Image 1: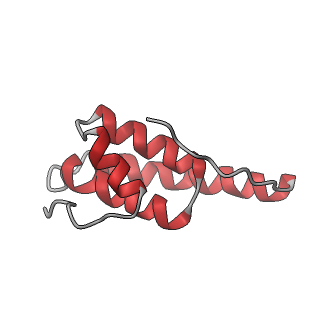
Image 2: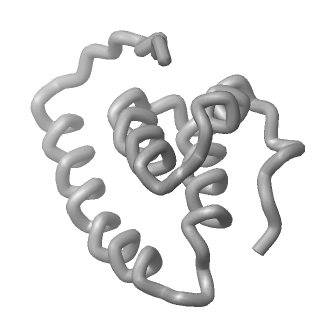
Length: 91
């Protein structure tokens, strides 16, 4: 799957803030992945939809790899990258 990444330039302070925010949110994400009531089939499309809205290439990379590793097809992932949310499953 070929991905188009937008190049953005940030100052050091902004990069540090992004890193702190990513590390802080990763604990909550790991906890939610262990919740048996929230399936990967439900959470992966949500993660990809939010990533699509935010437009962060780093988040796109991580969430795309997670979705593919957990069984989403490349077509499903590409559809979500393209903003097609109609096929997203309900929990």
